[in-house]
Every structure is written in C-alpha cells, then in structure tokens.
Amino acid sequence: RAGSRDARRALALALPLGADALVNLPVEDFNAVLGRARLSPPELALARDIRRRGKNKMAAQKCRRRKLEAIARLQAELGRLGRERERLLRARGQAERALGALRQDLARVSAQVLGALRDGDPGAPAGAAPAGLSLVLDGGFGLE
Image (tube, rainbow, N blue to C red; front, side):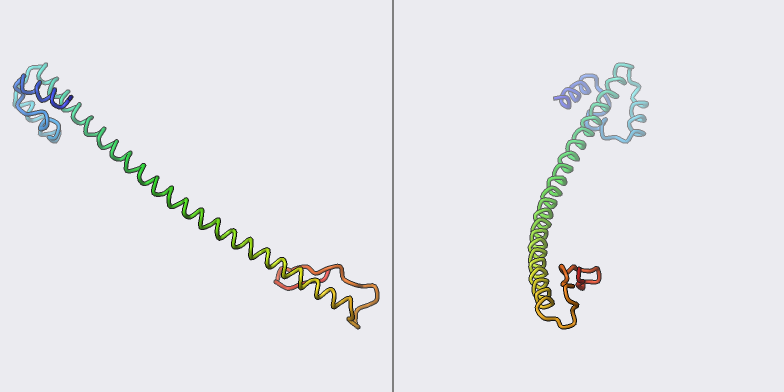
C-alpha cells in the first residue's frame, strides 16, 4: 500500500512528521515545518512527494464518492421519470378513450339532427338538405 510505504520511508529518513501529518497540514504549516527541519534535498523531495501522493489519494477517493453519489441521483431520477412516463401514458390513454366517446356522441347527435332536418322541418327549402354537421371553434355546431 502506498500509504504504508510512504510512512515507512518517512520513518527511515527521520522526517519531522509522519505521512498523515504531512498530507493533512495546511500548506503554510507544511512549508514552515519543512523550513525549520533543515532537510536535505532528497528528504525535502520525499516529503513533498508524500504530501502530493496523499493529496492525490484523498482527491481520488472524493472523486469516486461523488461519482457514486451522482450515479445514485441519476438512478433515482430515472425511476422518477419512469413513473412519470407511466402516469402520462395512462392519462393519454384516458384522454384518447374520452375523445373516442365524444366522437361517437357527435356522430350520433349529427345523425339525429340531420335525420330530423330531412324528415320534416317545414321551414327547410326543398332539395336543400344539409350534408352534415361540423364542430365550430366556440364549441357549437354548424351545418355543412
């Protein structure tokens, strides 16, 4: 493991702090400790490498955690959208059935009205039988 390897190396070179402390110190404190310790260039490089690897390890763990959280959020959203889709499909089916029923009612009423007009409307001119009814924008009916 990289953490234990860095800890062993820090102990072997007698660095003033352990690997965990090197990683977790604020940058100002880290630089102050290294400045006071009068380390050789290889020891200084090791301390900086330990800090860099530790920070990178923490960043990678945080990234993996955020990725898993994002996946969980997306899965929850997918479930919610699936339920919404099913609800909308049911509502669409109900609306289509209601529209079919209204069309049947319109056809029935049209047939009744046209039949009544053909059969005996005394005010209708001869040979002027309407061809059909149509729905107008205001919700009423018109003769075609």
